[in-house]
Each structure stands twice: as C-alpha cells, then as structure tokens.
Image (cartoon, rainbow, N blue to C red; front, top):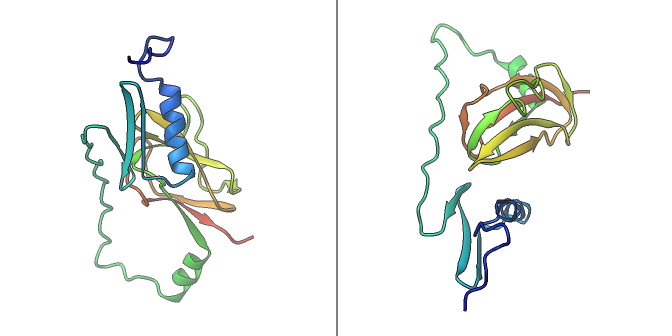
Length: 166
C-alpha cells in the first residue's frame, strides 16, 4: 500500500527538495536517491548540473567568449604580474544565471571599489529555479566584475576579481 502524499496535495515538496540540494552541496554529494512508498526523489550532479530521475539532463548554457585582445596592444610585463598576485578570483560554484542583486529594483550586492569580507554576498546564481546567494570567500576590495547581470555562467567561471592588499 502506497503512503499518502503530503497534506499540501503536492507529491513533491519544493522546500524539501531545495534542502536536499543544499545538503548535497554542503557535503559534496554527487547523488541522493530517496524512496517512500511509490514516491521517489533522485537528484544527481553531473559536472555541477542536477539531473532529474529518469536520466533527462539539461545542457549547460553556453558562456559568452571574451573578445580577443587587439594585436597592437603588447601585454605589460612585470607590473601586471605583480598586481595579479594580489588579486583573488571569486569563481562560480555552479552552472546557472548570474544576478547582481536580489531583484531588478534592488541595488547590486557589490560594485567596483566596495570592501567585502569572506561572508559578504557578492551575487546570486539561479540554478533550476533555486536562487543561491554566493559569498565572496575572501576579504578585500572589488577590483572587477567579470560577468554582466543576467548572463549564464559555468561552474568555475571567474565572476569577480578582488584586491586582497590591505
């Protein structure tokens, strides 16, 4: 005999599924497969993507490629290398859509020149209708925002450059 669905009438409780995704990320799990009666929830990461049960996968969005530098500009040598050593890069922990603020009417979490700490929220990445606040992970001053609001991002893609000099 099958167990009854939740009182809400919805077979899948979105809050519980979101919590499962959080647990997967917290504990670096690649798959969760839960069954209760005839109800089954299976979440599986595939290179940062969640794949629903049944093996249907979603192709990651294609990231825009930066324009190539003009051939006439010679790369600066030592000063740029020394400056880059002081820059930390905040990278995307997942595939999704990058947002600079919590809503279109809200100001951006950070902008160039802002001081941040490791716990400072720098952006939101939406993945499968879940909005994930992304912490900086480093202290310093925002030196560059590398992604435009609303652009798709890949796992590991640089989002911000942070000057870590005091």
